[in-house]
Length: 365
Image 1 (tube, one colour):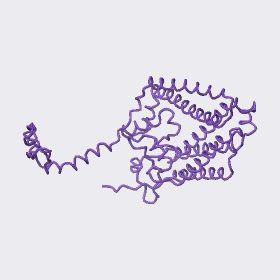
Image 2: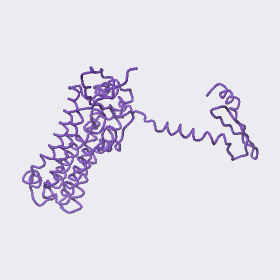
Image 3: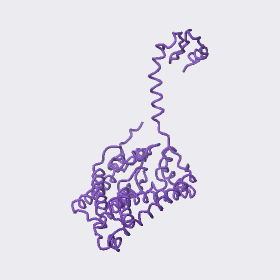
Image 4: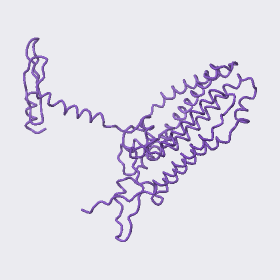
């Protein structure tokens, strides 16, 4: 605002307090200067209406600005109280379900729910242990330093998203990793089934229920289901870290500053990969990152991998709930093949992406 408009605003800064039936002094300051109008009570001046869209736009932009989280803030004491209470509740409910002697539908459902609660509570316990350790040991500061020349907002977002147990599914760029998530999902699913079998062991007529569930009914395809995501994750990590002649992915700003090639040489290909933007967090963003590329567009290899894995997981859960006495269910060959092919396609896409592309040369000024 210029000096003239500022002076006008200063002169009319005192609002007139109206009587019960008197006029209301309405002040409206626009970009070109101040304007004061006395209107009847309850009415609005035209100048004030004109400023409303601009004020709304500024408010929308302010709300849209995403503030980066502070990774160093963690209420350890509150978290520990919550986890201790949940652990006590999980132990009590698990003991109650385990001593039930009726192998009916209600008991099987209760055991499955308690097993799921045990997995969630164990995850919370590990998270509470990891985050204070990472803060005290300076690991989060090391994650911030890995961002190089990125601004502080990006560094804080990277450290926040990779701290604690979240680091099991978050890649080095701060985005949710599709391959790591598959490993976590299948590990949690098999662990959930084993806890469920333990809770049902006493109620089953057979005395060796748990041993038969993990022994005689063991299916070798679970080695494939657990191995495919792990192999895909290891392949993706090795390919990404080995890109750009072992230097790893380069941010777009550094890629544009590559030294110019000689006239008789082809420009070198660079694998460009920017870190997650500042302030991005939340489970919704994480789910979207599982099926998209770094630019936010849908990645078909990632989408196929996620879809076929979810379908296989749903079949696994339904079979365990319906027939827990049969132990770990046999996985159909069709689902096993689709999961394996999608994992291979995901790894192949990573290999192709890591080859990079020729960065656009900035014309010399």
